[in-house]
Image (cartoon, rainbow, N blue to C red):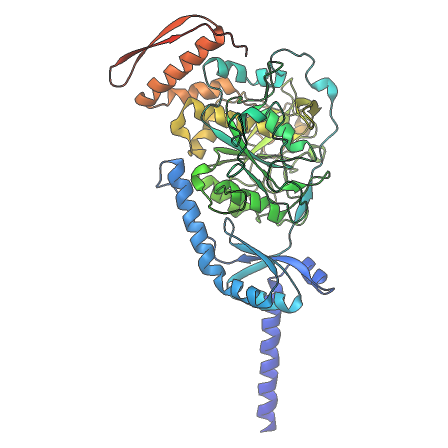
Length: 534
């Protein structure tokens, strides 16, 4: 009898040991170390993540609504038992749906209870990152003060404007340190500004209020990084008639994911901004609306410390499936040479990753390069996708001023602005992420690296694409021309009318525009002489 009792007791102890080992295997070692000293914050990644494939849907609005409804329903269903535990424990927590996860602050006992739940796949830390820009090479920046910056003319955005494609009717967005929304270069195109008053509902969100409580109710920027990037996307100084941005007639919205003068961001702040972009809300976080999502998001940041390689990938994938182009800066670790594109979100195939070039179409020394090893070291993939000017870029900075900055952070906004130009040239492309990105690749100016020492992966001196320049440097004129050539007949008529009107206004001539519509109706539009400088 004693032998039977001993065996049963041993089995119970072994079973308990196995269960204990199982739940700890789910938890990142850094969390176990930290929580042994007291409370710690951690993130529950749920096992069930929704499949948001939208290949069966056509419009951006339909895709966004479908993805939003599916994600929120999945989160509500699978998170319910865990939220019940947290409510009883009366601890701090925040649930998310763009990635099915819950941020929690608790002790060891609570961690064990939650990690043992079968709905939890893993428990990860709240990774973080700070901005680190290379030194500015002032000689690489603008040396003249003509009507526009040289980086804008280099990529032929000014030629796209001459065709009437200036980003009109398109909203683009940024996730960054925030934005000085009243800066004269970007105020006029802030979606929350109607020319007389501001309405920040659906146009601004701060995901860093727990770490940086400033300005939760209206856009602000205590760093200048975000303001600079937005200037490159849409900037125009009307008083001085000077263009800094790619798409001066596009509207913009923004989310603050990095706070303080150091530009500190966390996994939860990045994820929170990505979630808000899929379905913008009122300032108080209520009434999310996926139909108000932007066409593209500029992400001039990377989760450098503590983010697991795949941690932000569900959010990026879901945004892409919702019809939003996710533009990501490649990073500024080019001194490491190959395989230096290593931080989320620039590493993901679902992101459109941008490297940096000089105004001479040479790779910037700081620009990170492929191949990417962090996703699957046994099957590395090529990055970046594309390059744009990023050395010595002059744009908006704090207090209504202008200044030069360098970095792939400065290159990425060119591509977000280019998306606005493409969609303004062909509104039918809104939400078609694959086609928009393909147009940018197909029309890029091919660039290669002749020096074998600087080549990466399987690159040769003639390889296009390659792991230094991707498919090449963006060409806005070629991109909008290809986009326009794909318009449907009824859309062609409307766009021609708008384009010819804009062209006439730009040239300052008296014109009579006759447009044959899809219904064979001839309309005459008389345009008086207006002088407009581009």
